[in-house]
Length: 417
Ligand SMILES: NC(=O)C1=CN([C@@H]2O[C@H](COP(=O)(O)OP(=O)(O)OC[C@H]3O[C@@H](n4cnc5c(N)ncnc54)[C@H](OP(=O)(O)O)[C@@H]3O)[C@@H](O)[C@H]2O)C=CC1
Ligand SMILES: O=C(O)CCC(=O)C(=O)O
Ligand SMILES: [Mg+2]
Image 1 (cartoon, rainbow, N blue to C red):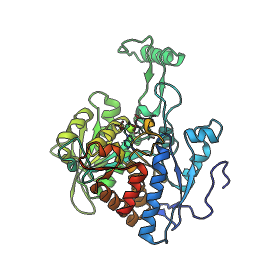
Image 2: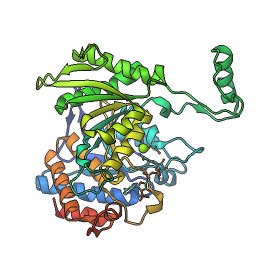
Image 3: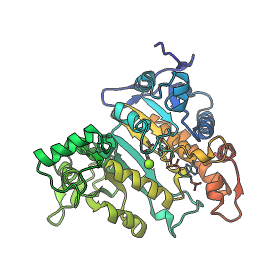
């Protein structure tokens, strides 16, 4: 395929997706990557070096990734004459099925809408999967960080992230407010003049495809519970409906039975016969429960905004956003990315922790079925941290640790594989 600026590597083949959504992965897959804005320039090359080293060590040259740079954000705007979101980037991700990205900048208040959210929407990457686990030796603000072992399934296509909002004092905002007051009889808009307004779509289909993924994950990984996190006491027909549709799905598709009359539902893991509890917690209570009773939670399924808050909070609990990985998934495309943003004040300083993007790549390797290489990355991560060779974010909280740069941490990780 001819691209304008994307250079397809001379060697390597496409990963293909089978009808049952499994992957056919060649030994030399082409994997597109977006370097990312801000600290992307620091962490992306380190991630590539670490992944290449793990693959080489695991397979002795019989497997190798051909990396293909694709562009979104600041680098795209330069290359494509002001186009921050080139169509060929989307085409390449669709064509190659598995990709990885660094963080992208989003202006606050005005300017363009999030490119990160746009990628998720355009590719219908409806699941944001963010595992949260502690690595021994990582400094944490809590006493027993190892008790926190959760996997967040964040709905990635709906909620107020859909971006349907209108700025105060515009004709659009006035029109929507006028409609809500005069046609719908709303009386509760406190200051209808000078009022911005946003719309929060949450559908049964969107909820259930996300909760379905979360329950399948609990079944496949033999985990004890799936917790639906919502603010349904206040937002009854969006967040409350998310809870109800989640419970409904557990009963109708997974043979769930009400536990003690409900609302909790019990399903039986078809692989192991073990019980999986589907339960729910209101979002504000969840933010204290994860600190006070983390062992009670395993898989978490939640809406877009709650999932955004919860993933940064849980990341902090196990050592910070510098090692929090993630994936954005549809049934056919997977786009891996760190949980953190562009941390602009550190950009280009070879300083930040590359762990989050490296662990996102580790998830990517497992997605390909390259578990041996993924295991080496985990070994290397454990080894580097336990040897106390860590980046600034950990070093400032550890006694006797050796401060290393972003690339220095990558090298330490490779040494300990
Ligand atoms: N998916 C994406 O691409 C995302 C993009 N963004 C965008 O990124 C930009 C900046 O957002 P901001 O709110 O500052 O959040 P960031 O996550 O970029 O940074 C917040 C703080 O987190 C810490 N941090 C972040 N990354 C690392 C790392 N790799 N290693 C160590 N510490 C790290 C730093 O803490 P400290 O100061 O304590 O050292 C940093 O100041 C915004 O434009 C935002 O929209 C935000 C989130 C996700
Ligand atoms: O798109 C952005 O700028 C922020 C996104 C974000 O915070 C996230 O996905 O966790
Ligand atoms: Mg976030």
